[in-house]
Length: 164
Ligand SMILES: [Zn+2]
Image 1 (tube, protein in one colour):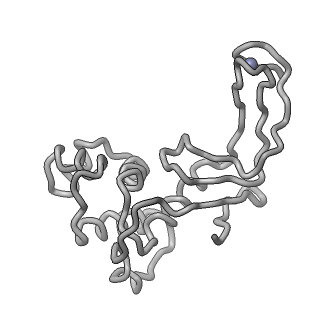
Image 2 (cartoon, rainbow, N blue to C red):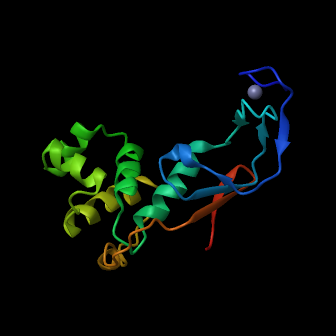
């Protein structure tokens, strides 16, 4: 397999886990996938195939939605996009102005607890058989300035979280 950018023969990349920044979260890491990298120093193109990406995003979203830490701006943005909402759609659904959504996602204004819990419930009720809302009152109770590291592995086409 050759590089689509420069034509150099690609090499298998050994380093795992793969830092999956394309999802919009800064600390998501994947195990069990094959990544090819262009050995040409001036190119550095990476080619990877992420199987069952819908399931992966569902697992990531579930992890974010069930954390006790308050959502960080990048996490709010990730969950909003996961639900398929534009900024304007999301503002309408949550009953706030589009400017408020922008401020949440830039970290200028904190989401109110009730709004944050509603967002999480939207994610969790969307993510399958989640009927356990017992932990709802523990969501968004902890202040944290940096994202939690999230690591995942693929096993028989199924994405699973790796406990930190
Ligand atoms: Zn290349």
